[in-house]
Picture 1 (cartoon, rainbow, N blue to C red):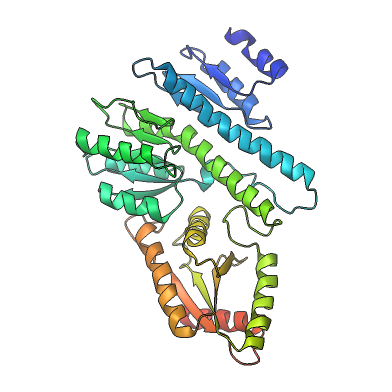
Picture 2: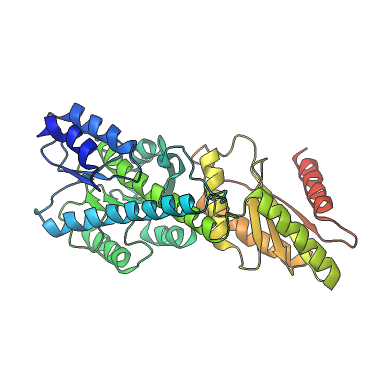
Length: 381
């Protein structure tokens, strides 16, 4: 019973919790959610057919057609996140010298979702989601596909404005691509749509924009948490050199690599260029800055390396690259940022500010960075 649930969770320490018949038991569910939030490793809670707004760490599951296989898929997807968290905790415990640590802020603060739609409900849905997470908008399936291929996303929200045939084709493509199969996908206007897709985190909601957003948050939060774990594990794999927030080198590792690269390049008489990417003050939030860094981490060439510095600038080193080619690469990178990110004023695209420097005879790493900062200050003034 609900009265025994909290005691049972404390005694048995389950790997997951399934909650049914939640109507009228909101307080008990909230208490259960608080217990789970304090547990390590991650304990997913799934509420079956919730009739109310859920706590942020309780995953909704709507039984369309009472398909038990869908519930098993949803549970397995959540348990996979738990297994990753167990792995991370074990590896941190076994390697006490690692500097890798998970951020302590709420994972929803890092989340960015793709909102697809062109109907009357699109603005309200954008506002409801944007109050809690980053939102990237797309008015067509074609535009959505470009965003999916260019950046790391924590969920897909589909509003109105699309035919059943278009929705079916899009969901089929998502289910057939392993990169997107486990993403939360919420369809806010799925009248006539079935749930027979290989998408374990697919939810079809028929509520208003606020209800759709409320159902989306727990699933997106879990996905953002999984992304954090993935970046932290990758950082441990390379000896704690990566910033788990961004996937880029941490500042200490960047400084060491940059100094080595400058010395080596000077010895060989080769080329090396550095770009510093900043954003106008007030045009970008901390969440968006981290998102921009993660986008660039996916776009960079394997030979290049970068960091998000203490001033909030993204510094990228282009190995074996002269100034002319560095300009071309920087234009491509900033073009992606311009077309995939918006400023804090949602109707305005970002305009990244770029400064470049190239290695000169006798240069040191510190001298190049000083030249970059001086040029950035000159441009800003």
